[in-house]
Structures are given as structure tokens and as C-alpha cells.
Length: 397
Image (cartoon, rainbow, N blue to C red; front, side, top):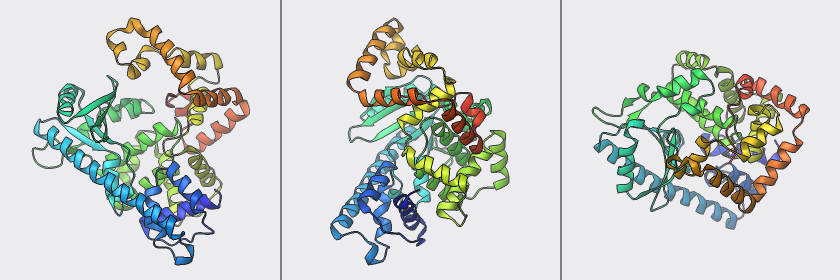
């Protein structure tokens, strides 16, 4: 990590843990750029206002950070309001619903608005998907994207985004993980007697978070916020560590979880850094909040395609019907139109995603055996080499 990356970690620690690690020659414009890349910019104001005056930014910049924090609070209030309306409507219609990820992780932060959340994630039973769809339409949500097997994306009139998951199986990195996620809803309990709104125990939710993190890690990578999320969960959630470690062992994720937790202990605890935690931290800083497109292309090429450029480009130029129907729902009804939508996708790539296409071409062209060996060793140390070689990385967009 360079100096400003170290400063950002120190400021995140100060914001949520109140620890004064020391900030060395802060370059606040660069810090804000880094923080935005990782969706932790709303933490900066909570941190810098605690610094000694000589280390604080100029009043104008401090005011800009204050506005970001206020905007985060307003966004959080809107998300809370609309989430409550959706959950109440599902509860009233006896649609069993399980909130996941951000809406729960907010509770481990000192203030919920300190945890950026792009959308709300809810899990329902597939058999109740049509009923849920009608309820959301009645609440003035518009369907943005649909996948029969997994997730539908909705947007409200106010811009609130909701991901309605009907299955989490695709997030499993191996058969044990897929089996576990297939039964995740059965592990949940009603938040109150007779309620259709469910909640997981902390052990089960943390296990799910590790599964979800791995999906992104093997795709485009994860950002630094994930490490803070996991650190705060371990700090604030009451969990039987024996049960948790056994659950992770059964899924083959105990080493991966331990590596993430070690980095969290370096950044936000008292553990000394070592060569591996430094390399993992560098990888995360290069990924951004939702991973990088070059990481996705590289992982898909070296992992799922095994370094075979013909297999890689064939899959990218002619995606199968299952993939295409997620982006173009009309194909579910009229699969014969698949070639026409391939052509439309090519036009979109050439006109609207030209920079991404250039990045992908450069990444795949530059990948060589030495790079593959380096990545293999990195994933081996992370405890996920076999999962990566089995091609569980995410699709590029």
C-alpha cells in the first residue's frame, strides 16, 4: 500500500473504531478518490472531524465531506423507509422474505448511514416470486432486469433499488456451498411470532457473507469495505466460533475466511502485517468496491477457459441462451431470436462499451503462463485455488 492507501485505512479505523492510528501527510483529494472507488467516502467526514486541527482538511473541503455524510444519511433514511414498506407488504401478504447483506450489515456500524448500500437484497421462495412481483408493482416498483433462476432487479419511483433473490445457489463455489445456500432460507427464523419476515443467526449470516465474498473474489475481486464489514461482524456479532469454523470447514472456506480476517486484524486490530496480507491488501485496493473489469476478464480467461483464447472468445461472442435471457427477457418467450440479440449485443459493445472491450482485449492478449502461475500461487495462499481452477469466477459484462 502507498501512503494515501494507508491513510484511508487509518481514517476508516478512526471513523468506526475511534482508534487514532495517525494520518501522515494526507492528500485529501486523492483520499476522496480512493474512498469513492471503494464506496467508503461517506466515512471520511466521521473520521477527519476527530483529527487534530493541523491534520484536518481546509474548511471548504471539510464542508464538502460534511455534505457527503449528510447525503449518505438522507439516502439511508430513504432506503429504510422504502425497505420497511416492502417488508410490511410482504409480511401482510404472507410472502416469506429474508433480508441479507447491506441492510443487516448497517447495524454493526456506529451509525447505519456509515455503511454505503447501493441496493437492498431480499431472498424469497421461488414459488412466491409472482406474488412478490405483483406486490412490488403495487408499490410502484419497475422491473429492471429478470433472471428466472436467481435474481430480479427492481427500481422504485424514487430511485430505490431492490434485488429480489429467488435462489442463491449460483453463489456457491462448490457442491457443498450450493447445497448450503439452497437451504439457507430454511435456517432462518421469523423476527417475531407469526411474521413472514425472517432473520438468520449470526453464524449463518456470516457464513453466507463469506460465500458471497468468494463469488466476487473469484470474479472481479472485492474492495476494502468488505474487510471492514467482516471485521465489524466479528467484533459485534455473538457467534459460537466452534460452530462457525465447522460450518466454514464443511464448505471448504475456512482458509479463505481466515485470510480475510487476518487482513482485517492488520488494518483494524493489532496484528502485524506480513508479505501475504500486504499482497492481499494490494489486490483489494486495485479491485474497487465491486471488483475491476480487467480482473473479471483475467479470471474468466485463466480460470474458467483455462487460458484457451478460442474457448474464451467463443463464450464471449456467442453467450448461451441462459446468459442472454437474463439481459434480454424476451428471449425466454422467443428463444429463436437469440442470433438477433447476439448481433444487438455486438453493436452495444462496439458503440457503448468500447473502453471495456479495449480493456478486455488488452487483458486477454497480455495474459501468459507466468501470469497464470502467479495467480495460481496467490489463490493457493488464499485457500481457493481449486475453486478458481473449476471456473467459479463471475461472467464479464
